[in-house]
Image 1 (tube, helix red, strand yellow):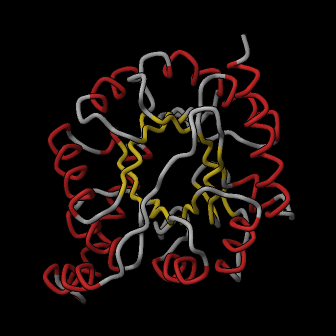
Image 2 (spheres, helix red, strand yellow):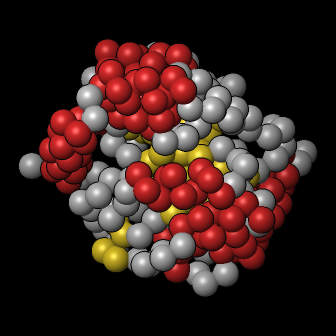
Length: 268
């Protein structure tokens, strides 16, 4: 079983327990009663921003940080200029939870992304009920029909969708739903290796008006600059921020590096 398939299998098992405790009709009612989602409005075409992540662990790196105060961490990210906060809610491999999403939502007034493996209608109502403004759609984990269905469901609930791709074939599938926000993850799902040089050739295949997000592999300022220089409008950063010790300063530093690199890319 691939890493992705193994994770999705665990996600479905955990979801079955939550569904038994709170049926779909009940979570959908909670979603309908939740405050309206914040609109994620990417900045001007010549700008660059960071989606900063609350991330305790990962399959590739293991344990990263305890994060006793996810709300405080998210507030530091926001103070540093993050455009949005990503919160891992997958339990088994990332040690995340919906409680973290609740805490972050209550602490910041910028959009919050529920970062999980979204494979069931229930999870989208659940995300909205817990205050998510953005959800992640991983093309590799979904059929084209599911991708279309979940994109439409997200929109109907007022949420934006970050559509994540890894290959040229996945970008072609994603383009079929005309995503406003398209992520290019430079991690190989088979061996979990990362190569930031994968971003540029894949970015060239994306629709011209799509906002591009560079994902995975950021460990230093130069990595963010590399994404921006290759056409990214945002970078999603987790590990470097939760282990760096200075979340506010690091977000500001990464943002500035990305903006500088993007400006140089656009210079005649």
